[in-house]
Structure formats: structure tokens, C-alpha cells
Image (cartoon, rainbow, N blue to C red; front, top):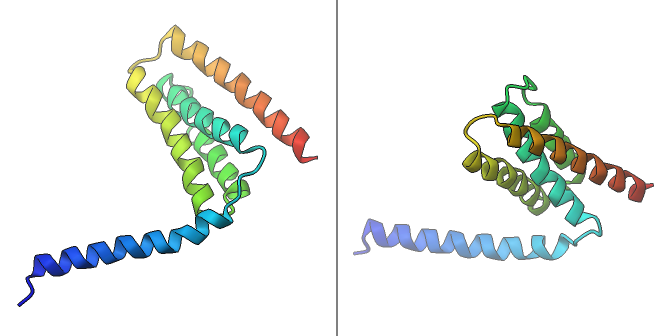
Length: 130
């Protein structure tokens, strides 16, 4: 007689194998684009800005998260791309969440620098699109 735990392990192993097999064509189909490096950096910056502006009581609400959603909508042409962009946003958010617990002058300076860098990247991306 097969135990429930053994069935559960087999089912879990089968699910993992299926996910790997199904994801392989997805990875092969999702070709890198020349501007991906900029998109990933922009995603990370948006996450950092979202956290820091929230911390410093900028009353932006979800503005920066919505900017990220718009970026994902425009560039997330596959599940893999959407996940990758989302992970970078979360990385930016969490890295500053671990560093800053209150709004400081350094946090405000970081916001300004990140907004400037994000604007430069966005301008570069728009110019390359034309």
C-alpha cells in the first residue's frame, strides 16, 4: 500500500518536472533585447523610489508602483519578462527597506539621484525606440 506522503512526494516531483519542461520553451522564446539592461535598472530604481518616497511621506500613493505596472504592461510580453521586471522592482524596494527605517537626508538625496537616473534611462529608451 502506498502512503499518502509518498503520493504527495511523487505528485510534487511530477509538478516540478512539468514546470521545468513547460518553462524551457518559454525561456528559449524570450530573447534578450538590446535595452533590457536599462529596463532592469529602471525597474529597480522604481522599486527604490517607491519605498523611499513612501518612507519620507511624499504622499504619492501608488504612483511609482503604477509606473512599474505600466512598464510591465508595455514590456512584459512574456511571463518570464514580467517576472524578471517584477523581481527587479522588488529588489530595489527591499534593498532600501533593509537600509532605511526613517527618512533621512541621505534617503532624500538617494531619491533625487534615483529620479534623475530614471529620467535619463527613460529618455535613452525613448530615443532608441524612435
